[in-house]
Image: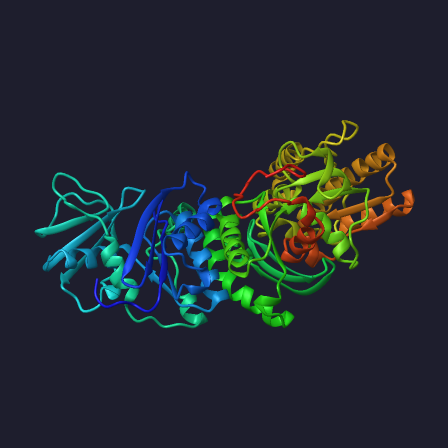
Length: 218
Length: 334
């Protein structure tokens, strides 16, 4: 777990309908998930309160906030990002956005995986995000950006991992609380402009944009 | 008492600071009209994305304009419905975070009820009851009797298209642009409203509205006239049909209820011809007419803050666990 830390953090991941939360205090951290039944907005404060209670913390004692920026549920991500951005803004605390590719690659590295790897994440439209990288890398918050491909039939390289999904050919990698803890502890810039940079990543075009683009191409 | 208002129900992101429910300190509106124009209407997913982009900078701008710091805010009013779920969620999540961090009350606001608050806000006055309320907008047309805080008797509402939808659809058909209301108003200036005989839907049939028949009649006319169509006259005729329909229903409602105060709001209440028709009704019936200026007729957070302030007593229990309600009807509980 490393040295005793001075500052606690609070993190939310709502990229799926089951929201994950993590909080730290000193050298310890606590992580759990909640089923929101599509009522994230109703539950978000009680989820945070529940996490604060674990370490008997007050909200004002949280030193930094973190949020998963995707890819994942559009509405879920927006809700937690809007919530944490507003908290960071009003409390003048830094906010870190962590994407699933950074989190997953850090998890793989922690597990001792090295060399060329491919990370795959399916989207709801049957397309796939794919990122390729050489592990270890110096900063997992700066992993190569994934590309969107229409289908993913067979791994082209040996080490392929599905983020939060697996098949008979592709083992799954489930981003770990330990990897998140490590990423949340890295140095962070503060200030309003930094908060604004935290936004959903790898957002797909809407059906309306796709349709319009087809019409304009014709 | 300072109320922060947050509005994100459709395609306008708005943040306002209002003192004592009547005095606007800041009312910043970021419109997405230009973004949605190319699609010919609001795309909900795009609207939600833009709300998230805009809301934090707008909050900062509103505080700066009002010269208010976060710690000076006493309560937060936010639109909880009706509206687009994804869009509403951005405002609600922001409001909940601020309410929680600042340890101040969160006031859920019904967007349609708030439109009526704009009538009084424009005069820097608290609401006076009873009044007859007419809300005419892109998605709604409701005629209600307001009898107190969150106490409404629904006399009638649209059974199908709202007037704003009607204008949008006809405007799109005529390639006049988006949003349809202002485009049709501009095109119809100087036009002859008598040239085309369009129906006045459901007159003499209670207080419900229906604009789909009028839409079909206009579309049929466009088709049958072809190149002979005088677009300017059609736009004038269409507006006259809408304005006359609303006016006659309002006259009947005033006669039935005996109420002597009429509040009209919503985006379509910015329409010049409708305002003229209703002003004539008010003069003839000798009633008080409250129609806010156009900038308070369209979606804005000042009306949310004002409504939240005056209806605060309605919310006795903790509201932070309440959820978005996309189909929230006027007067209903959450």
